[in-house]
Length: 353
Image (cartoon, rainbow, N blue to C red; front, side, top):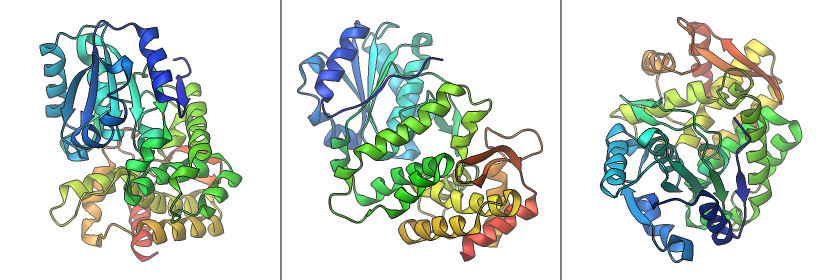
């Protein structure tokens, strides 16, 4: 799989026009959700290259990243005459990029698609890397395929449409990239003034660096058979927290980045007891997460459900829950296992930290 074409720019119209001209689609479609249709589509709909675009919209929210939503997109594409030579532009956050990419990758056995991420999380994570997918039976990204977008165009001006919670959700993935990369990047992220009024305006260079970290790993291991699993740090526990929050009647669903932040607390503890990750770096990171992300309230009675959810992680082998752990910042250990007692101990730490 070739290196993905990702552009970070403030010249969105110019780059989108060039991308469409390169693909030369017979029909053009734009997928939004209810939120990005209202907040983001007006920022691009007046572009000359979008004049003939057909619009498809789905409801907003992770709970709609489902097979039913994918079916709706397929039906709309079919009804409006899409072919394998057509192009879908996914304009939205991680849910839109994941689901829209999956729908495009599977319709007519694959049509062209471009991702224009509008959230920080999508810019640094969901829009790049070639992973597409939908949730199924309450499990995160249970169904999907590997297929890279023809182009990913990142314009940080969309960040002005986000509230602080959604900015923090994306920042959790950037913090993960720092932890798996190098101490300087990690320290810079911990020191960032995330409460300043112009924080989003200052993120451009850090977003580009975060994307580059992910691109290096994806280019070396596009199908996630080895090195790319570094990107899953925080995600075995994080996806369990995310699914738990969606399934439990006593919880409010948490944003993906928040769940990953909680998962990093669990997996930093496992890294400390199993891989000798430095205690001081663990405590600094956990303190940053606690101060900025709070926590998802769980009790020990929830442990069996969380453990069961972890068994569905796509990295697992039969009989083992697989984790990506750290021996130090930038020193990644993939395919690590932990006993049920060790995981429960880590969940105790998460509750008490």
